[in-house]
Length: 133
Image 1 (cartoon, rainbow, N blue to C red):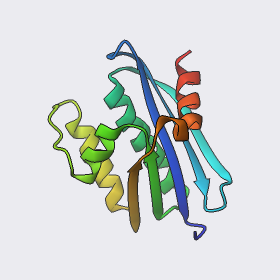
Image 2 (image 1 turned 120 degrees about the horizontal axis):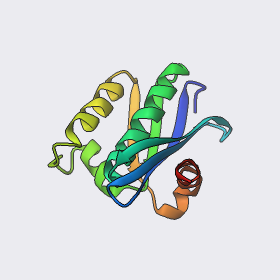
Image 3 (image 1 turned 90 degrees about the vertical axis):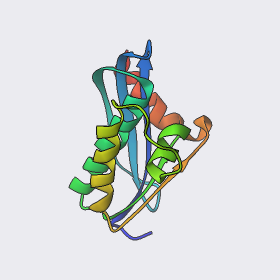
Image 4 (image 1 turned 90 degrees about the horizontal axis):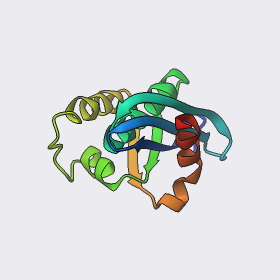
């Protein structure tokens, strides 16, 4: 994997859904070295809004680092399928978040997103949960 390529794991959490929400993300280079992590509260949001906001924050950070190829991994099957175009974005509150992801995606040379089981997303989950405490 070239130096300008990364693997990003993201997660968003919400206590109450909607409720207090936070995001977590970990950005790694092709050799698995951590380039950056994100972990912060985002205020009041649903789980799906938090998932989208985690992806947006991670993509913005990757672009700021000069990354042009991203493999993004999330344990939110709904959000992954919406971004892939397999599911429609039905909820009005998710539409602007979806559109922002698509804008960021266009700035990359290559972008893939895949759903991973929760067990494979523990580090991003830990970062999101640490921010909400």
